[in-house]
Image (cartoon, rainbow, N blue to C red; front, side, top):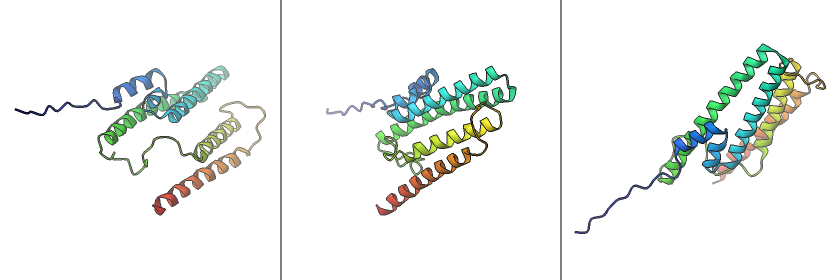
Length: 173
């Protein structure tokens, strides 16, 4: 009587644990999933939005307070959902299956080594903040009127170049 006992293996990443960690500290769920750079980026974005909310509250501008509060809440929920979806996708890959959104994410151990996408996003964020300062949503006294447009254009170019390189690399395979 040789019976084979099949023991179900536990998935490598728990979506519930990723969600709880993301609720406790934004970005921690993605660190748990093994995406340290993404987790740190989420933490920095959350801290920046929180600092912007505090600055808006001290300035007393109700429109800026509401706008920043909505951005902060939206990003908080986004990063929780993102860490859950990432854990599920990692579990599918560990089981030998292909995730449904694998076409979008070529599958994802870490950030692109060139870093151009990262710096492009940073430059666009700085440009958006500078434009918000121009419209007095936030206050920065030393900004010029339209120089942030140059920062946004440079950021868009870096992201575009990275996408073109990625598509050229996939076509060569």
